[in-house]
Length: 69
Image (cartoon, rainbow, N blue to C red; front, side, top):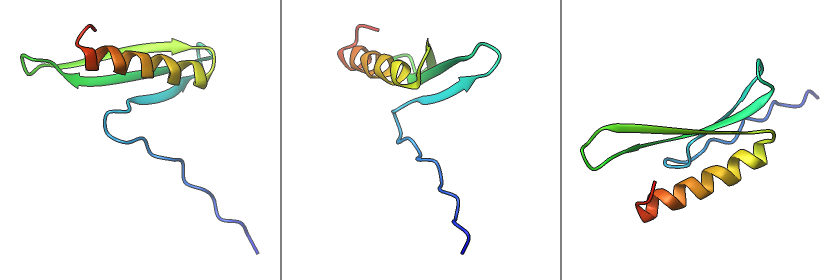
């Protein structure tokens, strides 16, 4: 019996996006939010591993919650 392919886990709203950039050989993560003026803002971070990017996004999300980013 053939095994079915597993679907990649979707990230929830507010978690940002993480993707691999083949040309650079690095991972990039980005958060998008709406600022106080109603404008869409996007901040990106890069790292050598997916775990590095996930950790950086968590820190950035914490800064945004505090209002310091």
